[in-house]
Image 1 (tube, rainbow, N blue to C red):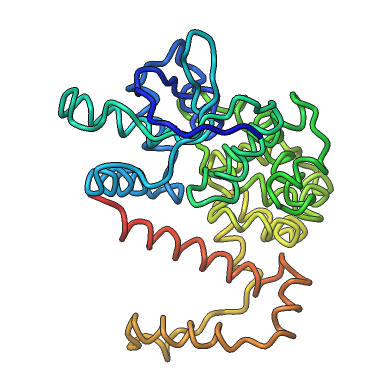
Image 2: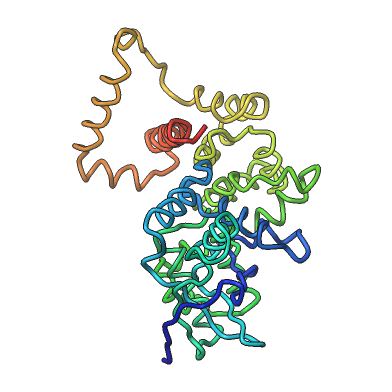
Length: 336
């Protein structure tokens, strides 16, 4: 391995438009410029689907405060004494922004970089996977799955190689690839236009890969095209309620309610009546604290029982709670 450290003029470095973390934002833009890449980086680096550009903004202000970066970017030489970013698109974009704001000669004209002139293509993939799939700046799940699918079906990497690159379990990686393919095959064509494509719906297609889900849909006389329309029409809300489909579709009354009003209403027909009278005067803080304490003290045998029946009422209620809490917490932390 041959490495060289130096400060490289930022105008001699090209941003990597093929980086899968931002590729989906730019794939319909011919010859994207630095500003468009910058905007994609700001959106693509969020820590959650609705977290906005908080991570990008925090990193930018940290670099401004420190007058530089503590971790060099990684580049490789290309033609004409130029370099291509392998890891560090965000930091390079921030340097360019500061140079444009403050003008040349203010410390942002060159960026610390490690030059690797011996990288093979599979090593580039490994670096990307380690930096983002299991690193400190996660991609959104759809982009992860898109890249995994590219490695498997375009680069024809064996699953064992992909597994060793990113450290995930083979079944989970295979489910992400299958979910991506199902979303592209059934969901995208069902949309009125490209602008309606919503990557936050991806988790529904991940849930679709769980054991028994597809079989239940087909066994009830429906097709996966119907599933895509259920997602579009928000019949499946919250998305974790995909796990309830076997029981919903297996119950005539619940199935009719689902097709009319969605999974949330259909689930009520399968649940025991909820008596909330004793909780009416309980404060939100008390409810949250009691629930937190109950969950912290849950017995391992109960966890095993939930794991054994992931589409059961108890498990689905927990996943529904999780989705509601995530949405609320994202709204609370979102920048105005």
